[in-house]
Image (cartoon, rainbow, N blue to C red; front, side):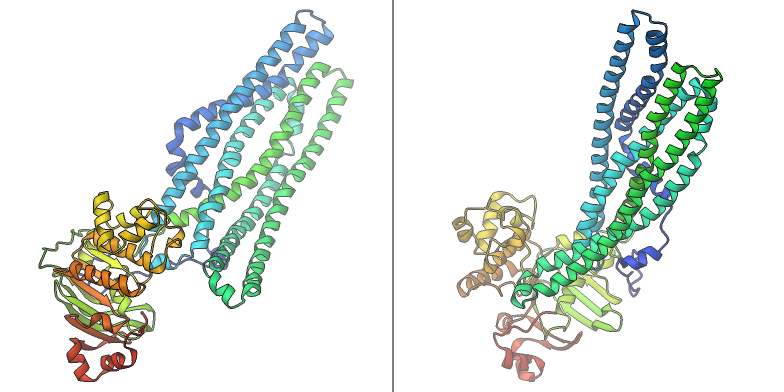
Length: 613
């Protein structure tokens, strides 16, 4: 939901909710045709040139199957019955030409179909990623990374298989059947009608099995996501698993999810396995009846052997496309289920968006950047307020500290300033500009954030620092690293092109923190949000970084979440929070003199972590 500038007290829309698998089964799914239309409109339609070539190759390949069946009639008549000598060369050459044409067209069909499918899946994955990365923080928190990765990879692979084998295969087999039907009709129309009499039975069985398969496949995909979630949680929490001897516990959870997934996969396998034998049974009955009637015609002189040979060849060749169609319908059904799940991700909309007439945030440096909280109320969960009627004034260019026990609301204030969430009531403004009236991009460009746990990506050190300002030169990156006391250790471990590993695991905690601080320094933003940015550093590195931060904070609005009170003694204003409310405010000497919560925290927790909220 987009908030208009005047809707200052409107409760923001709830984050996108991810339904439980059992809920999804009950939810009404869009029709197959609706999903197909969207695939054609948004993805297949963009590949019309390659699809046209693939379709042309498909038609040619299908026509060669009919030609091979049709050529039996003149071959038997001219060679075996009439014994025409030059036909011994002509007919084999024609067969070779047909086979060569089928090989070339088959290659073209496979190449253009598969390459098109890969491009379509890549486009779907791009749309999925773009949709997810633009969601607001609340919506992202509702999505488990393991389940998302399962959809991104497993469901996309199912869709790819459906396009390459299902959609393309359906077209090929239908065209092949039409070509063989023409051959059969030309040889004997009565036999053709008899052989087609049981096709409605094939269609009925295929539809029933396809419906069962789609239901089982959908649940199987959902259980695959649940299993991926369990694996992701186990790997991310591997230290706790080992420390608390939880191997058997997490294994039992994983085994249960594997078993549930297996049940649905087996059901899908059963439906898929029944499709071909069912079709073969019906096709065998049709063939038996057709042969019996053909024999009666031959006995009464109504059917020549060459005509029968050509007809029966076409009929036998048609058995394979019919068998394939029953299987391909199942594959297409699975693909539609996967596409529906992928479209759910693509269609997710953020609840935090730019207002229709949002303008860029304007901060006039060096005297701008004042932040105001006016009677803010906010809760993550109903009935549990994180901030309760809070008002704050953070003057431009000043250092303001937020102090309080765990759960007091300190981190929530950061989240609201960055507009990760919108308040349920009240107004937050920067230099008099309501945050809901400015663009998200401009707001965040004016803020540099350093969290207690440094977040690094599996890229080079230079790339991680440059995330603060992607267009920065190498010299600027090095200057930021030197200011953050990071240059020396970077040079010692191999330089700025050294990769940091997953989450920066190749670096120590202090090294990761200094990289994050260098990133914030490079950003050169007028507003700094520091979540105890030096808490992971040793004494010498902390002294160096504190000196650098002191220079960086000059002329900038700085908000510090303080877990160690010794780091905020020089703050211009200290706000003391407790249970979502501001209970005290003032300078360090003033608050000590008051003898309230701050004084107790300072007395009992000096140099000790106070926790984060």
